[in-house]
Length: 174
Image (cartoon, rainbow, N blue to C red; front, top):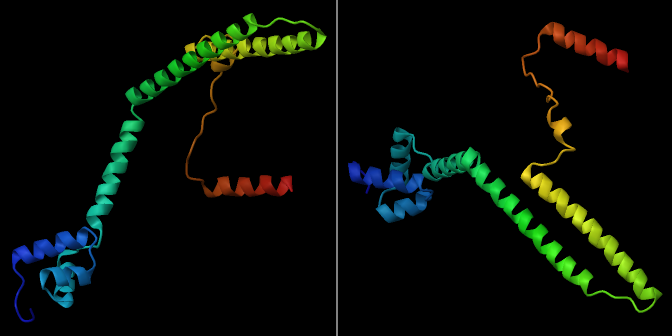
């Protein structure tokens, strides 16, 4: 196709193919345009291979981050986790209660095993109770720590004096 000017449709098609990630060779073969003509057209229109894919990926990433960081999404995920914790706690308590009810000892070895089971059962009850309290926000033990203020992080550009002070404090420490 040497010597002929490219039509507007040929240029558009070639640009779309290139931005979609096709190689020059594949585009040249598909559109019956020489590689050098394609290169000139791409240079003229500032076309880059895979530009559409890169933009699509970035847009998808932005949408995903927007969705994942939305307060509604976070509330829904927290509700699912709380519901799951409650269901597991309920199931563990029910199964443990049924197991304890069927235990009876006929000798000291069995009595020791039952005692171990009861200790495991009481640990289970304590752990599931703690899970329920945390899930429902009823943890009295954590109320004091939640009232503490978090440290403040200040980000700023360091001045020459700040750098000099930092060097002095480092030298004194070593």
